[in-house]
Image 1 (cartoon, rainbow, N blue to C red):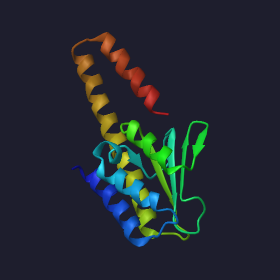
Image 2 (tube, rainbow, N blue to C red):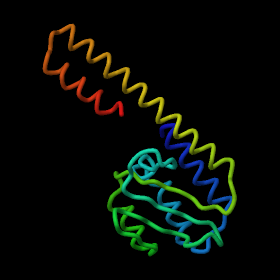
Image 3 (cartoon, helix red, strand yellow):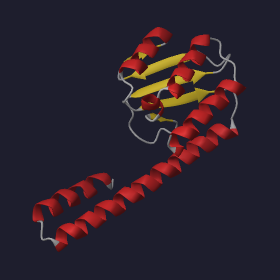
Image 4 (cartoon, one colour):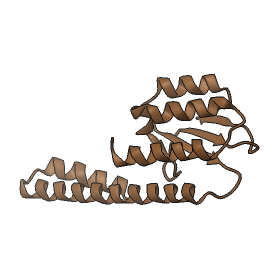
Length: 156
């Protein structure tokens, strides 16, 4: 299990242990998410990228316990949400929590995820620059053009 998956699963365990939910299906769905590697490897807690699927989970008294937004569709039906998660395990999922008060651990996990994303982007950029250098050394014009185009598109 990667460190990224471990911190995600540990955080979901923390939420399950420390918060109550009006709908027990929320507990079941959170356990389902953390027990499926494909799903847990594709969840995000920080909304810093365009993710089409957004699962909102609210602790007791904070509104609908579960709400899934996908495109223009919103559902609060736990069974529909389960089927969506199960059928599309490899799609990114933004998972946010309404907890009733500011939870320092939740803020830390979002900050950690944001910094990990920044590190990955820096590593990716370094790898692309290295490949551009190799393309120049080999005088591979087509590869150089493709890589520089990619670099320009990802540097927004």
